[in-house]
Length: 345
Ligand SMILES: *Cc1c(COP(=O)(O)O)cnc(C)c1O
Image 1 (cartoon, rainbow, N blue to C red):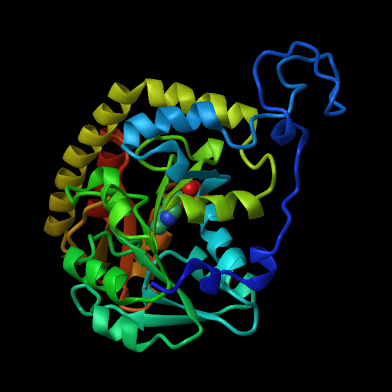
Image 2: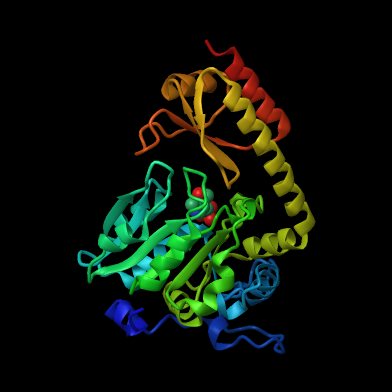
């Protein structure tokens, strides 16, 4: 890895971040707060929330096995996807490399930040080859985007190839593990100490059943987390979100139950798809969704919409011709889907 100072945009390196009232005084002992121009009424919503969400981070630290100083929390993974661009990529100059197909936000954020996005096509098994990704890099490549299990393909990326990229690339490697709770593959979170150029993303939106609260996580070196903290909006995670997140983290048994039910349902639904005459192939899944190649994805998608059932039509995505992406629902939702597809003519 290049030294961090060489990777960070010069304006960010020299940035004096906003210092909020809550930064300047963060002790617990005081009882009269006349420093932040807050309204004394309407407690507890009248007070600015903790800008660094320390109480929540302590809880996440326990659950995820990562020290609080190695955790960044954001307004969904969306924020944690945008920040590496804003911290590392000079608009109009730098570029990033990613697998294709993958999650659409990496490219959207590249476009918003005026950063060149270089997609490298996966092979027919939806795997990538480290050497091909590295060959797409040049001196101005700051980030490599990996997603494992990958969206929309559903599979884990080969861990040896991921590690090869992390070991050989001079810049930052981001591995989005939004779906790792559904996978048997060990999370790269546990390898953070070994790889100063690694950022691992997690979210509350999938296994944790909390997409509405918008809470995304990035795990990385203390230096990278400090950089993110400097650039983020001061109060990027609101109080209601912090409280809802602590509540769901306390209900961890529910989450494990949901995950095991969904894994059971996944096996059944994938098996049922394989039996459908209109389904040509079901791709393996390590996530809470799977990709299925159909005889005519567009027509089947339209038919399902008419029945009030929405799946994701991925037919126009590279390597996903005639593919539908199906999220695993409850048993009754899954049965309704299969029932409808059996009636399709
Ligand atoms: C769903 C998803 C996310 C979650 O994004 P949030 O902003 O945290 O809701 C992140 N990455 C991938 C690959 C996803 O599919």
